[in-house]
Length: 146
Image (cartoon, rainbow, N blue to C red; front, side, top):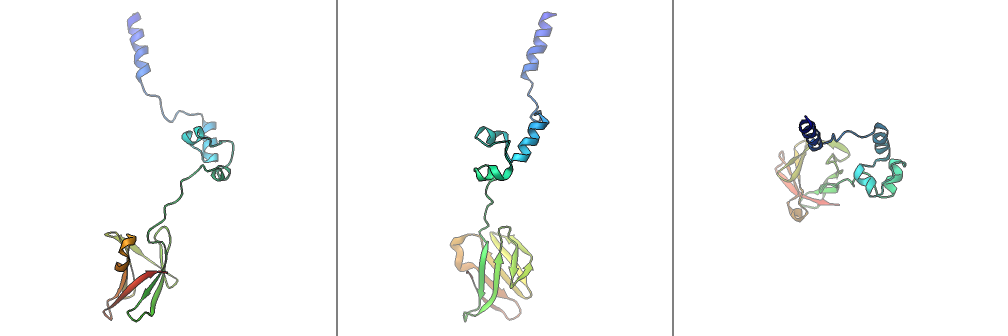
């Protein structure tokens, strides 16, 4: 009998502890402070607010910037401006102040207004491949970062 009880106790030691088994008050402090258990060990103070911890260098990681983000100018072959393009970090596109749907296609951001299709490459080394094409007049031109 003693061996069965010992075996059962030893078996209990090998069971993993539940990862969600933290005190609810502690979990609430973590949420309020923006800390995690790991960042708390690195100095994040669970008694401060998210803003206070962010000033101290803790909190959410910096948001990634989109390679397409910024101001762009589409010009024709003569150098006249066809349209002004603005793209934010979430790849939301505005052409001449109007919101336009966009999609990623083979490493490029592609969007269309009317008959004009715009293509901006994600790789900054491919600057000469950013272009627009007007399917009605069969004209094309470059797009450059402003």
